[in-house]
Image 1: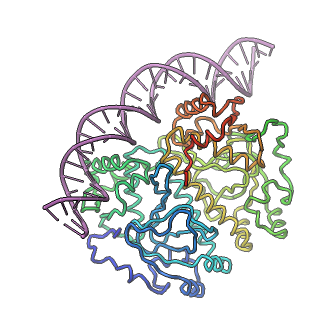
Image 2: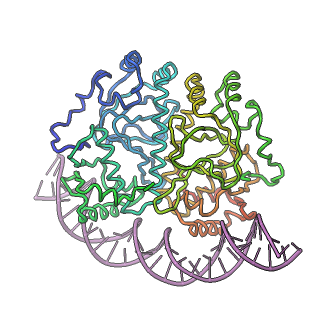
Image 3: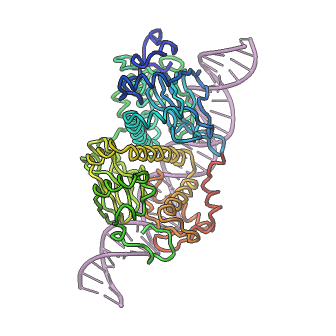
Length: 250
Length: 250
DNA sequence: CGACGTGTTGATTCCTGTCAATACTCGTGG
DNA sequence: CCACGAGTATTGACAGGAATCAACACGTCG
């Protein structure tokens, strides 16, 4: 799932991704990317894999936090529960992204697998100990966190200042880019297996599912998008999509 | 400015805050809070102070980034410029908050002094070198960045899912809390010297200045707030304000 | 096949943005 | 000291667009 590809048969099974760190698909982008061979051996020794089916909760809100780790495959949604019972997706994690705060005893928001997901976990206390001994690890984690912060602030602009049309177009673009990066740049495919439902998209954009649906159909009738399957979306005219997203000129 | 206090005469001048690190008002909350005496001496040696008048730009967007540092006094707004010429304030920095990414050559967004501000800067390359030699510094920076990320995600919920009334109430509460923390807990005052104009508040909440104004007057006529001066706001009924902000029950 | 979750489309309402006029604050200079 | 003007805040009238409510289509699962 969640791969950009015309022939889904190429998609590896989750179990086939469980390998030694040297051969890991996210080796050079994840928190471990600066690790030396020695450090990698330590990490290799400390990690445990866990798979989640689409829709499964990875951690709940305000739960004891015992482990942290990387998304190896799949898409994970960070969701905050609201007083009125609704939810908002306040962040999306793609392969190589890091989940969890090693310096906290409890989680602040929940994490849900939006597609079939493989996580590479480290025991929290063990990871903390590694962080202290291995500056390269902390350095990379800091860098990733700073990137996440920048991305969150960029997204505030999308949610806060763009029109509904621009929001939806921006979202499709963002998903496409992240999935391409995760799956290793698919050249011509341009077909997205959308991991989020309309409602989840709406939660992320601060809209309603009806409005998201309407905007997507408008983008379809405009010839920019094409429905390539039940949950698959093809970007027909990427330039027009970028135009519709109203990307900053500066 | 920007102090919660009934007697503004108590407010220290900015210059009086320029002291040795040991006596610094943000000593125990800023990036230097974990520093040992030796490390503090190094930081003390590397720092330079700079003051900004209200409205002055501290750094522009996409400029070469030569220094990073802490807000000692004042409120700083991080603003993203939009294609249509507008702006959005995507973050607020209060005393002890950190400005700048040591691992970047250029800034991504601009920083503006929203009130008279004192910055404690470190030369970027020198700070980077210190980070590598002093794990306690990196550890604290990581912690602060993770906190910023959580705060940014919390704010996404405010901007995305709350009603206008709730947004404005949340904003007033947030400002009050941050100013109280910065100025060292004012017990009964509850008077806020608002550092942001209506338009800047609107930019932060993704609203218009008119809507912000209307909501503030509604909160005033409801007896929750009281206009205590040209730019001063008194929280008359904090419980009602929290209620109006629609804070999460969970 | 039927039921449920999800997606699409339609009709209506209400809120917020927009445009506009007026009041207020503060700094400048006569 | 007052007058003036620029910037900001407040209030009003109005229109547009998204939320809301509702009905129906689609796909998947048992």
